[in-house]
Length: 175
Image 1 (spheres, rainbow, N blue to C red):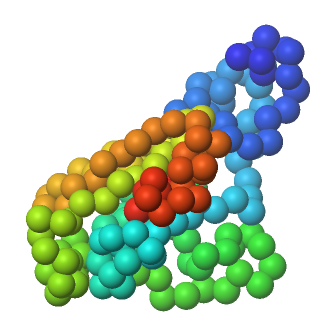
Image 2 (image 1 turned 180 degrees about the horizontal axis):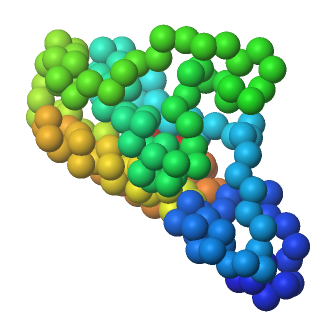
């Protein structure tokens, strides 16, 4: 709104993906999309049950469909990662990252030793980036296909981060 009204001249980060198209269609606004140094990690709590189980954690990594996130949630304005470091940064490298594979995720969950009744994780999503909530909801939907329950809690960054600092209030997943 500030760009449209002329109150602001430049936005460098955090433009919601669903607004980029409408900004591009406004002839009075110039939109440039460029590679950034931003990545979007999903932190997995290795101390909290059931994500304290390595096979359980690996299973979760196979439920993340990077291509769908980049293309559908970020509207093609993101890329599929090739390492934990954005490719636009010097020395990023490329690694064989886990592939989206729901069947493999299910197999690993079954082999993890975690009873199916405990296939439940909490996922903290901070406000201000609508894509984060969409990613959490997408993971929730994929997980439900194989019996994994993903409980999403949204809130302000500071509140969720304070909860994340104590094991008893922390989530299994933190955007």
